[in-house]
Image (cartoon, rainbow, N blue to C red; front, top):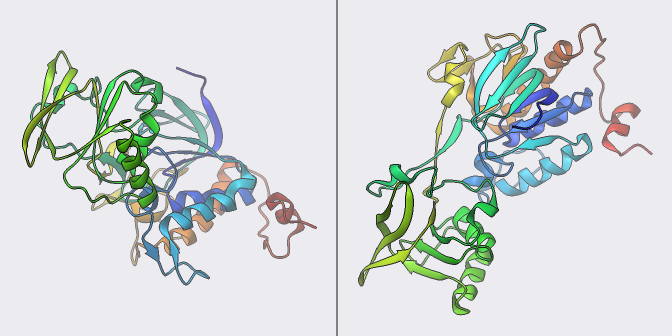
Length: 342
C-alpha cells in the first residue's frame, strides 16, 4: 500500500460533470483528485458511446461524446488534476478535523477536505458473461479490466467482445501475450474502424487469432484457466487460455455509496439546490446521481450544479477566506490561472 493521497477535493467519477467540476474548483484554487472505476476519463461518454452525437451542449451545435470529453480535459489542463483509475470507492469516513478519508477496493487511502460524488448513475459494474462456472476463475485468471498490462505477459490470452475495450486491449496486449485470441459472436464490431482494421491486419500476419463464436465453457482447476471452449458455426474448438478478459458491457449500480448513510431518493442521492450538498455536510453530489425536485438528467444541468457546488466547497475547504465571485472574461487573476492573460 502506497502513501495516503491528500487533496482539497476528491471527486468520485470522471465523467463530463466530474471533469467540469475540476474547472470550477480550480478557479477557486482548490486541488482536485478524481477516482473512477473505469480505466480512463469520460464515464459513459467514453465507455458506452464515444461517437454518439450530442446536440444540447451550449455553443456546440453538435459534438461527439468523446469530443466533449477531450475538450473538457483540455479546459481543465491548467489546474493539473490527478486521477486514480480502475478503482471503486469502498468506504467513507469523516475525521475529527472535519475532513474525509476514503478507501478504495484495492486498499488505497485518500484524504480530502471535501468529497464530490459525480458518479453518473452510479459505479460501472462489468456484466458477467453467461459462461458456466466462470465465478471460480474471477480475480485469478478471469478479469474484467486491465490494471497492469504486465500481469498478462507470456500468457495464452483470450479476449471476448466486440466493442472498443475488447479491440483496444487486443491490440495493446498482443505484444506481451504468449498467444492472443479474440472471440466475438459475429464478424461485425462496434469498435472504431481503425482498430478493427488493425486487428484484421494482425490476423493476416498470424500475430493473433480471431474466432467468430461464443465461449461456452472453461477448463482448469483451482481458479487457474487452461482452456476456453469456443462454439462457432462449425462446432466447438478448444483454445489454450491462461488468462481471459470478457468485455460484455457495463451496468450501473450505486454500489458502496449506498452504505454511506446519505439520504436517498429512489436510489439517487438527495441534495439541496443551493449548494448541491448531501445530508452529510462536506459531501456533495452533482450530475445524474443526485435528486431534487425538478431534476433534469442533462449534462447541462450537471455543469450548473458543479458551479454552485464549487462556491460552497470553497467555503468548507478554506474557512475564513473571503470568496469573491469573479468572471473569467474580466478577471486578470483568473485568466492567469488559465494561462490566457496577456
